[in-house]
Image (cartoon, rainbow, N blue to C red; front, side, top):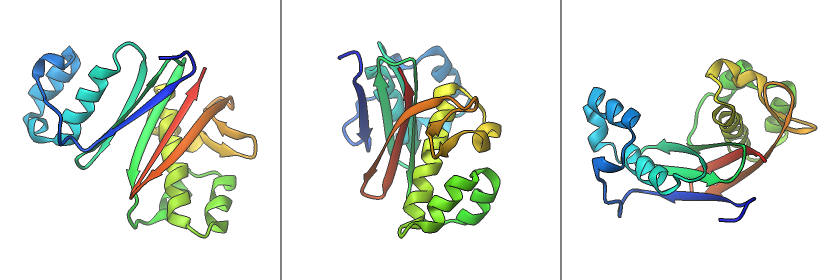
Length: 172
């Protein structure tokens, strides 16, 4: 792995060979408290991918039976994945989008796609900075780029894969 490379692994869990041995102590406790996770393929897949990325900063996200992990040699790293589906975007935008982000969505031809791209970027920043959801409205896009809760720039990328939006936020 090169110094500035970030890798993204995306899996549906079909070929994952799972063993409890790869779980961290925290994940083993989580599994013990929530036995339904044993059959949750996105949890299993995300932990399998997390184990593959042990020697780098990593972040993971999972939805339904899919999981994604981003890893690389950076100081801060967050990834989020959402599945494009209809939802009340106006309610979410009122709650946590800034004026610039709202304008981007309103002007877009593909409103739902732009909404999810912004939303996943916001969540990726929260993960990178280890912040709670109460900071969702304080991070995001501006005319200056993607900013964290303190107004500092972060690098970012978003990918559209079929019905999935995957966004990463990072700082070297």
